[in-house]
Length: 397
Ligand code: AMP
Ligand code: MG
Image (cartoon, rainbow, N blue to C red; front, side, top):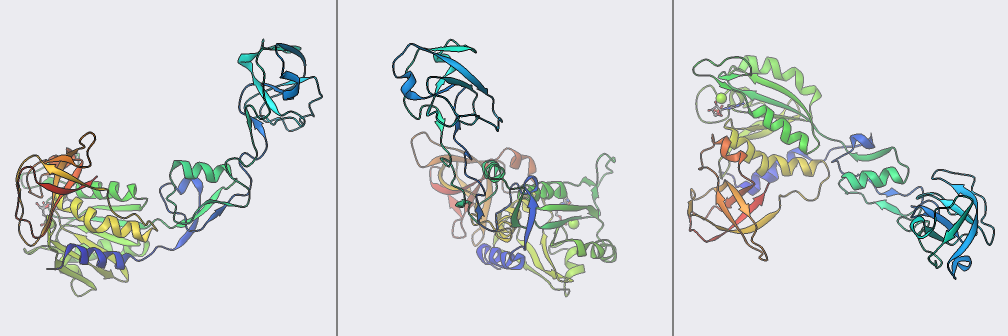
């Protein structure tokens, strides 16, 4: 048996690092920036008003109340602003450029809202309600560093400094294949002995959440020739093939039978659930073969595929957030394997350690319990019994 950590390392090495590509901002969400982004403009690009109001010289409104003629109107977007003459005001909107000569904005609430002349009731000092050029970002400096995960705020900033495209680590294209003669696609009716296929839907969703592109072959029967005939021609378009089912110790193990001796190595990992695993290359394309039980699929994804894919796509944070929690009930675990149990974690107000209880038993077919879980409880290899109230590691999903 190979350890969880060693196998994770093997899968991570297999996937390597994706090449860099240039994508429009809208397609870069969730991906990792591959080079520093320099600001092409300052933010704000010009001094502008933080309020709807009146641009003034602060000296003209030091003593209030005072009435000033309104010399001009400056909506946002106006590009031909005229200088402010002493003893006058210009009506100005939020985001509009401050006219040369003005040094403050009086907000509309402190005036009579006049359009010919305006009565100002509150004194202003220089700089009031003025957003200065470069206050947020200075032109020519680094706005976003290589390695940044492109979430909403980062994509917003890239847009704001004038970029339409970004260099990112290319999202991997993953071919997901479910195997099993028993598998049926809804809404076809089930015959006794058949089940609805679910692994490909789960894997596709989990992969897309990481930013991967996904193609799916919903179900292939347990026939080696059939498997090769359907999947081999599709490999050319994939950066990675992920299969489920057909890798354990029985007969009719289609994935194992088709790929043994083709560059894929099958082994037992010291993990529960999800022990039977395989990985390698088929026609040069990386392959990760997962067991068939739905919970094994999800746990294998968390333990091996997720960190390896994140690493391949340039991420540096590869792990789920890990916290300590007290068990609300006793649990057992097979010695010599790291057990991942589905659990529900509740933080304890004002304390570092929360509480966690299992959702469902250890069975790798108990998918409904997984849907009620918000974490995986980690019971290490040396643990066979964990008492109620003892502290365990929890991975927050
Ligand atoms: P296997 O690893 O092929 O022996 O499958 C183990 C168990 O998982 C069996 O009970 C299968 O019916 C079930 N299983 C395999 N693939 C799927 C799938 N795609 N969707 C739902 N259940 C599956
Ligand atoms: Mg099977």
